[in-house]
Amino acid sequence: MRNIQVITAAENCPYSVFAATEGEYLVLFPGLGQDIEFIEDAIAREGEAALAAVLEPVWARRLDKAAVEGIHGTVFHGMLERKRFYPTKISAEMVADPDALPPDAPALDVPSQAAPVTGPL
Image (tube, rainbow, N blue to C red; front, side, top):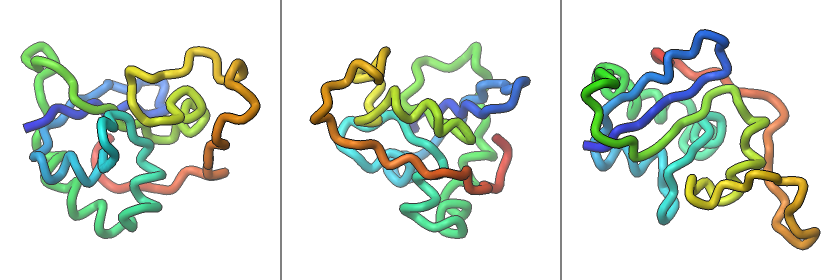
């Protein structure tokens, strides 16, 4: 099992951690070394209904954060403004100052509006 932390834009976000099977994890984090995902991107890639079906069992496996031994991936929900810090979606490659990126850096595809997602976030 892989541990996934979900961070939402809610002021009272609980930073919940859920257990996902390897298959569920790979649906959310399909890229090589990827450990960051924005739920809006996952919805665009997988489709809302298909992603909801994958995530339904994950939401039932909420973990006690005090007992968690490591977080393998982070899902942001409603926080597309943070996407510029994670151009590769690999946390170890986070960009602290996106404005300092070289002019020839690839442009980030940032959707203009967050898509709804079902389930407890």
